[in-house]
Length: 306
Image 1 (cartoon, rainbow, N blue to C red):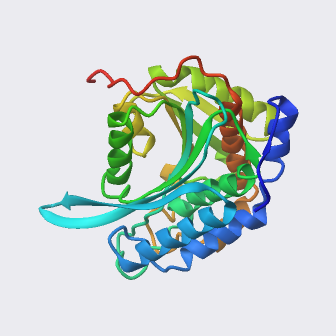
Image 2 (cartoon, rainbow, N blue to C red):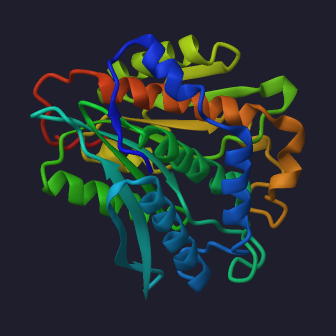
């Protein structure tokens, strides 16, 4: 990769970044992940996919690239999975940390050890993380930007809980998390990106709404206060007191391919460019957050019990 260049923060700078997100590149990332046949979080194929993501991060020029394995217990049995991460260090003397994330693992109701292609759930989110890394690695930002693909989300947000807990214990000044989980299914009657937020995430929800509406005006948004929406990896950051958002297709409950072996890229052909628009909205927000002067970023504060 070419040396990263500093970029002055303005709407044109964010627009320049968003414009580079490429639909064919998104599809290529999704297809590559689908081609591992299964990404059940404890299989050899999952670890192969994690290595593939790490290699992509390295090729894009990210630093601190890591496949971080962790042990966990599930129904009394011991297993191992992994998170994959890389970053662009911030140039500010006191940078905040902005995350764009998705879960790498997939599951099916039938034969997850043999075939869990997970094109929408959640190669689509990881493809957005990869595209963001490809594009943003060409630039420098005041804040550190981290790109993370989690393992073991499908077994109970295990990888993100491990990551967010470690971040809190390290005092990481995470100022914004954008988590993507299923963004390909957009039928005409419900072509909407649902973005739930909680109280500590209200400010970044407003930032997301403004960034997405400015740079992807064709995308319909449902940005809603919904602290009970805890079924994806953003919730692990809420638990540690970090502001985080989820981006997910509003029609997820109607998706006929959810956790099925039919969750393959070709079944979403009719819905493009919905997935690209969702990815661009997330990228616009992450770029905006990467430029923002966050006053005195601090480590996480544990959320009150609810």
